[in-house]
Length: 127
Image (cartoon, rainbow, N blue to C red; front, side, top):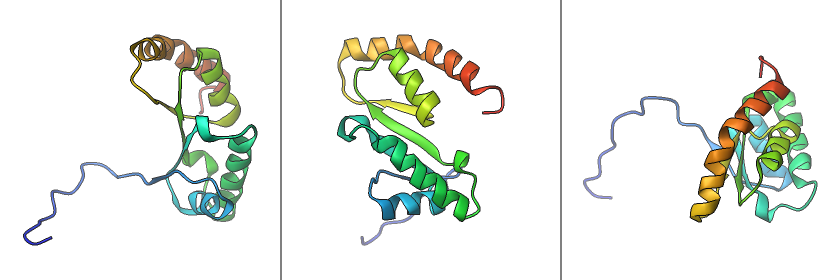
């Protein structure tokens, strides 16, 4: 790219999130990456838990705390209870609403306070 110049350094660290699902990449996430980004609509039952287990094992083997790896999930129109279960049971720390349906966006936004409060109570003050 002739004449291209790099911009200023970022004001904060730039995390590396990977959206992968095969074992080799899950081990890479556990050993090197900052986050795992998945899309719930493409996952089969049990794949989220299985992927988390591979990532956690690879992180531990690499001397990393698995809790330092952010778990992100693209979701469709889910209830607050469904997102709470995903956060508490599967460690999801970030939900990304897929789509632009105004009703889904309104429901998602309205559920945020309940999700945050319930997940904080379930996880405890240290998480």
